Length: 306
Image (tube, rainbow, N blue to C red):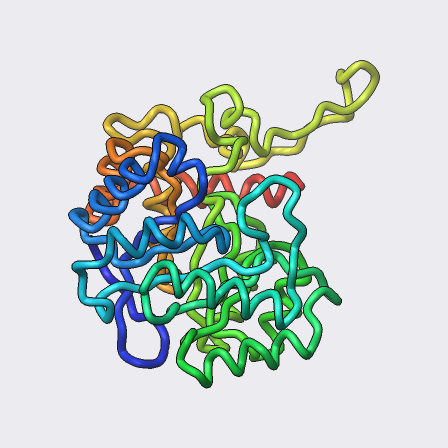
């Protein structure tokens, strides 16, 4: 496992962050612990609770009980309810403080390294909530504040300078706005975590071959005028993601986002210890020669077609 700088205290974070939710406990707490043990054996030292569910926090705390707390990074997602169906989002200062205190109490973790706010809308986060989070940080219950989501509202939150960590979708075909968001976050000395690195449109060869394909024009899709010579013609497809020997499309997409030096860690949700063991090997592998160039050609051709 490879590690990258994290925060302002000289800490290091693993290239992969294991995200945990109720689905990881579907076969019971023991299965959840086994998943975490597999991550630890693979060298993963970064963990994220997808919500403030106390059962989830308790399982993570139990699995990390014999690990030096200073050697692992643990984030909790706030504003996403507690994982129960129908639970409302709560970005109030009291609500977030109560959720974090309850998770700390049952987990025995002592503190959270990051309090990650889940996709707050533009006017969904009142000043009183920020004040409550700053108070939690002053009391050493949380060390860093983060924001997670997509869209222009994330750009606004990044620009405030109030957050230490950004978590945002990023993949092989991300547009320039997303890439600029990552660059701006790094300029703000924010640590960047990425998720959504293997979106639905790349998960089959047929779908990948259709990404960035130009739309047919003219009556019934025929005609549309004479085509000009384009040296990138035919390069705007991602079909090659499913045609690389010993490199499944998922691992290529993961390896690609990890080539960005501005990315601190990629968030994974493997669902099983067996799949986690496979994914955990990716950071130590070098992408096949020429593959990064193919990705850039497809991405640039797609941007040109758009």
